[in-house]
Structure formats: structure tokens, C-alpha cells
Amino acid sequence: LVPWYVYLYYGDDRLIRAYYENHKRYIDYLTFRSNNKLLNIGLSDWSHWKTTTPLEFLASSYYYEYARLLSVFASITKNNDDKEKYEKLAKEIKIAINEKYFDRNKFTYANGSQTALSTALYFGIVPAEFKDSVRNVLVRTVKEKDFHLDVGLFGSKSLLNSLTDKNADVAYR
Image 1 (spheres, rainbow, N blue to C red):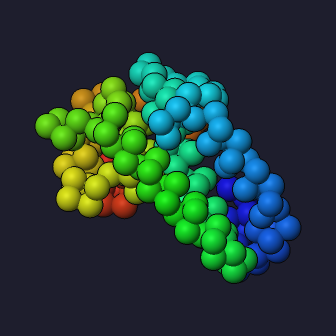
Image 2 (tube, rainbow, N blue to C red):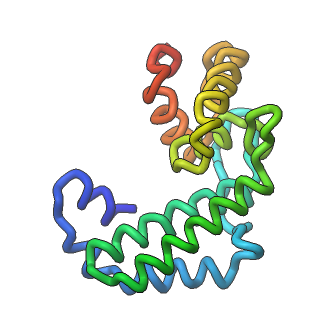
């Protein structure tokens, strides 16, 4: 993610170009380790307060984000075949996540944890027509915990970014 943030904030694509092949190898490795476009390896949302988030959901969400970013990197480096390949992969991962983990009746992901809901929102996994409903459930879960952030290391970034998007009052409280 560091090359992306350097590019995003400074417009410097040197890290993307220098490590492009490494990124490809990493995503290809994750694809090899995945099962039906879902990934079940990694640390999950460690150092959480009370609620754990399923490893497969979180690992697959990051797998999606990495594949999506690699398609952007391919565009930056003018690798059009790779751009299409990794866009397709990201789309397939997103579909797999939504098919397995999105409850369209409750507007929740995985076990409904703050990390699961906010990660799906932050990475753009939530289908557009459900974003407001999922965000409302996220806000409700924060309020139900008396405004305590029940996340771990990974969830803290996605939760605060997801809340400040439209519910800054909840994030700052």
C-alpha cells in the first residue's frame, strides 16, 4: 500500500514502477492460495477490543483491494493486459465476498462487526444501492457500544474513514 499512498499524496509513481513485478507476484501468490476467490490466510483484525471479525472476510477484502490497486498500477505503467486481468480478478473477488458474506436483509457483512461493516464500505465492496443501509447499521453498532470503537488494528482505519465520510459526529464522539 505504501507505493499507492506515495503516488496518491505526492504524484510520484517511481515506487509503483520499481516494484510493479513484485506486486504482480504477490497477487498471483494470493490467487494461488485462494479458494473460489476467497482468501483465508493472515492475521485478521488483531488487537481487537471485544468482537472478532472472520479471517476469511478480512483477508479476502484486502485481497480485493490489492487486486484493484494492481489494476490501477497496471494502468499507470501502461500494462493494459494486466489492467484488464486484475480488474477482472478484483471484480470476481468482490462478487465472491458479497455472495458469501453480505446479508441483504440485515445489511451486514460477515458477523456484523464494526470492522466487517466498515471494511466493506471503505474498500467499496458494498453494492451502491446498499451503501446507506450498511452505513446506518455501522452507525447503529457504534452507538449500541456507547460510541466505543470495537475494532482491532485493521478495523481502526476503515472504521474512522467510513464514519467520517458521512457521520463525522459519530467518529469524533
